[in-house]
Image (cartoon, rainbow, N blue to C red; front, top):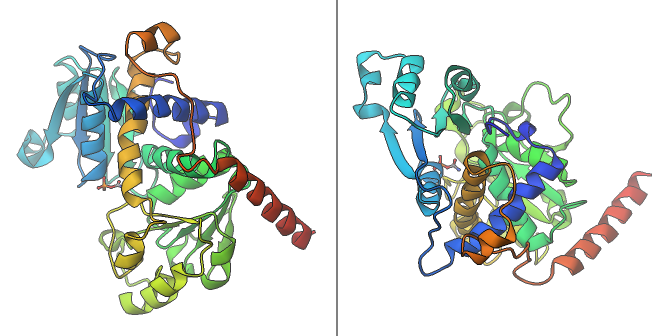
Length: 347
Ligand code: CP
């Protein structure tokens, strides 16, 4: 893997290998000194043309924990303001001697274009409404830690502004590649005009679905990407599609609640629900650092998962994934029973 531009760059084995590697790096992040010399001397640039809190800081933290040097590019104080083109900007930065560029841009396809202009590795940190591959990897990583090492048959709903969501596109690819069943829930105006080729079920009503879910991911209404009103009011949207306290009570007790952030509390998710014990929203953020360490290591550190001698040197631990609640196997069996019932109903 030379770049990470889309989840489609990874097959199932590739995703699973990255998730296993991220488990090892998660252990590193929990040490007293959460830093390893794995990528000492490598230079990583964060090139964000669009706002970010989580992704930017997460990548910069991940790179520093691998002992990379990090250059943070700020559009607001750069020569972009004097009219410098994207191509001139990235080629100028590369001329300083860099190994990887982490790029976020409002235009879909920008990371692919940059990959054609420079030799450094390119990682897509979100391009328009197209893809956000590392968000999807941290989402499936978080699910796997709770639902067990296999997501085969797990039922995950993605709810809200699918139309403008790069997270939804990458999540659908990652989840279905790992065998999960995905249901999209949104009003018709917040769905793409065509879902041909999307391996998903679609609903316009949330309530009946809730008791059947292993996990539910709530998406932000992306008002900054909406050129016209796509629903009558936020209040009406929240009333039909928001994860309120009453709706959350209809989820199974062990169902997980996710949100990629940033949240609009009181719109797509109630504050009490976001802070409830079933919410793994902050855990997603924590896991994001380990997942991005794995991506950087995989791109910059070589083709193979580090061997045991590196682990003995304190580079990384070799423990495999483990569900923190120890209930992964039971949950997988429950899931299989529900899947059998579902298939029986359909058949
Ligand atoms: N989830 C996510 O991409 O958040 P940021 O926009 O804060 O990076």
